Image (spheres, rainbow, N blue to C red):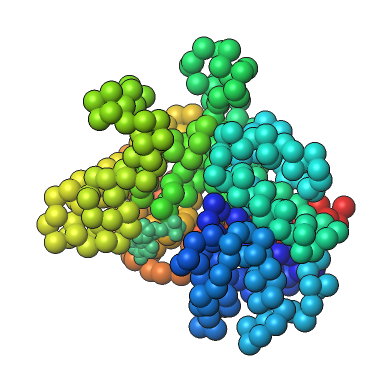
Length: 397
Ligand code: AMP
């Protein structure tokens, strides 16, 4: 069964076509800067990738281009749209309505729209993707997979904010988390690598990329996570500040004369590694600069690792221990220096990194010493596979 996985952002449309039964990636690509004069479309697998300047006024036109590239031209992956059996959509905010993935119908569309207040850019973009698919592939079964579903198991003491309770009732202000599909995937894979049932393990999962989040998964159930009402909370990220004293917000608005949109922009797009280093949101550039003695780059690097370390401590306390810590995404998978800094000094907690294994590259792997009471694993994430698998399972019911 072939599933087209769609991840629509406000000005982008990412896609993968996967055969779920054979675990084969048939095609992938992205339309970027949709709606602007600089729009372009990348399509194809690895060295066969082509980049095409293409006019796309909106997601509807982008989707038409994607379907054309999948079925025609030198990079075509299938002969006709009939070979696409279902579509899986990544949706950022599922709120309280969606503790699991669902088949999309009019009611689901209406709820995704209603929830857009909590994730304005993302949910509206996802809806554009859904509408475009409905138009170009009428009647095709579609499934919505939510970033927040995995964290619907959190208990109220973990997801509530100590604000007036009425605000929770009125607006649904609470922790929802994000990156849930990634945390779900790497927790399952970690159990497989350790050859133990997920239900027997206490895991701390760390998605460390440009966006960063961590979660505590106690016997297969997510009990806490670092992102909150929105993906701004928690760890320091590429351009996002993560958790800061909330009093900073009114202070900045008053002293810098900022509007709500401006302060939001500052915390989402100008903070994190970029804000502290003044160089880049990309950890590789920050690392290079810090090794050449750039003090603010060094500080940014230190702060990033320190913020991960603090959450490890929190989640060990929350679960009363940990069996394994799992790392994924650009930094977690690739940056040996950051991993060394995160785990330095944690030996008294039974967390012992193996220096040699930490240097090696590869796919799923254990990087702790054989006698480390807590295992440390690297697991490349694969959110698209999870979305395709959920889609397959729901459509086949
Ligand atoms: P992601 O959001 O998962 O694509 O991750 C992007 C982040 O991973 C960026 O900050 C990159 O600098 C970082 N990254 C990717 N490869 C490496 C590497 N080899 N060493 C350090 N950071 C890396």
